[in-house]
Length: 79
Image (tube, rainbow, N blue to C red; front, side):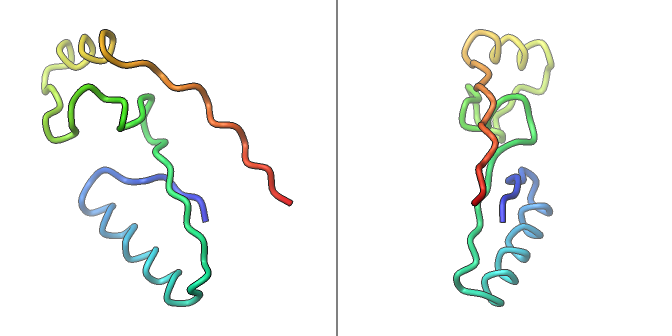
C-alpha cells in the first residue's frame, strides 16, 4: 500500500492504527510511505516543522534562499 505521510499528531495516530491493522491481518503486507502533501519535501525545509517561521515573509524567504523543489517522482510500474 502506498500512502502519504502525515504531519499532524491526530493524523499520524490514525496512520499508525491503519498500519497496525494491515500488518495484523497479513504480516507480509507491504507499506510504502511518501511525503507528498506539500510543494516542498519535509526533508528539504531549512527548518523543522516545530520551528517553522510564523510570518509568511520569513517562511517564503527561507524557502527561496535555502531550498529547491524536487523533480516529480516517476509513476511506479506494476507487473
